[in-house]
Structures are given as C-alpha cells and as structure tokens.
Amino acid sequence: MSVLRVGPQYATVFASIHANAFALKEAWSVGAFQVQLEMHGVIGLLEPRGGLALIRVTADEAELLTIAVTRSARRQGLGRALLTEAMRIASGLGAAAMFLEVGFRNAAARALYAEMGFVQVGNRRGYYANGEDALVLRAPLSGALAPVATS
Ligand SMILES: CC(C)(COP(=O)(O)OP(=O)(O)OC[C@H]1O[C@@H](n2cnc3c(N)ncnc32)[C@H](O)[C@@H]1OP(=O)(O)O)[C@@H](O)C(=O)NCCC(=O)NCCS
Image (cartoon, rainbow, N blue to C red; front, side, top):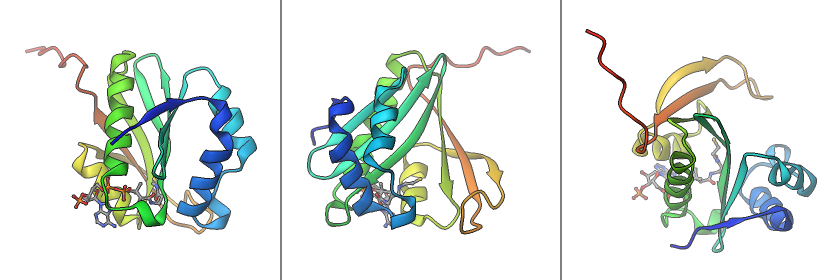
C-alpha cells in the first residue's frame, strides 16, 4: 500500500477520484481541490490505485475534510491505509484528536471509522442537502498525551 503526500498539482486527479466515488452533486471540483490543497495546514494524500484523503491540522486538532476510494478499488484496504497515514501525520504535527462528519446512512464509512477508533461526539440534524443527519466523530491520536488524572 503506497500513500503519497501530494500538492495542488494533483487537484485534477483528486477531482476525478472524487467524482467516481461520490454522487454528482457531492463531488468537489478541480478548483475546490486546488484551493484546499493550497491552504495552510491542509494535507493531501493520494493512493495511486484510486484513493484520496484531505486533512486539515490546526494547533492540536485535525479534521478529515474528505476521503474517497473509487468504486472498483474498494474493499482492498485503501481507505484504511489513507486514514491510518492521515492520523499518523496529524499526530506527528501535534494534533491530539481527529474529527470528521459522516452521513448517518453511510454504512461503509461508519464501519471504517469505527474500526479506526472514532466515536460519536455530536449530531448535526439535517446537515446534508438531502436532509440526512451528519454524525460528528472523534478519535484520539496515538501520539497524544493521556489526560492527566485530577483526583
Ligand atoms: C468509505 C470508503 C472511503 C472506504 O474505502 P475502502 O477502501 O473501500 O475501505 P477499506 O477497504 O480500507 O475498508 C476498511 C474496513 O472498513 C469497513 N468497510 C469498508 N467498506 C465497507 C462496506 N461497504 N460495508 C461494511 N464495512 C465496510 C470494513 O471493516 C473494512 O475492513 P474489511 O474489508 O477487512 O472488512 C469508500 O467506501 C468510499 O469512498 N465511499 C464513498 C465516499 C465516502 O462515503 N467517503 C466518506 C465520507 S464521510
């Protein structure tokens, strides 16, 4: 499994993977990826067989902005590899936790996130255009210090 860290020159590749993975209205454009990949704190990860992840790391928190694997490349471990690398990089940059939003009915993504240690910390009702709720999930990052006991 090879996950590469890439910059804005991969915006077209990212948009093409995203368009394959998501429904038309949910896919991000080349321009949207270009802007994101140029932003301070945003890191793009590419799995050349057809996967991407985008994270933003700010101070001690990280956010998974998007993750996508093309339909024909699914269930081969690309999503897990991308998320593992995203969490490793965020932890290395000092983030103590990673947050993300996922559709309530997105069983595949929810199963992947649960496996990677994400738990629900919030619920945004009717967040998506189709009225679906978004669950807010959080995972501690391995490099983070354990909370100090106060008793
Ligand atoms: C979610 C997504 C990125 C997963 O990518 P993937 O490469 O297929 O995932 P992996 O092969 O690494 O799967 C890792 C684990 O996640 C779980 N999982 C993944 N897809 C699943 C599915 N369809 N049903 C149930 N569990 C699933 C399994 O536990 C799997 O391990 P296993 O294959 O050993 O059983 C992919 O389905 C996708 O791109 N979906 C569309 C875009 C999307 O919804 N992105 C997330 C938005 S929040």
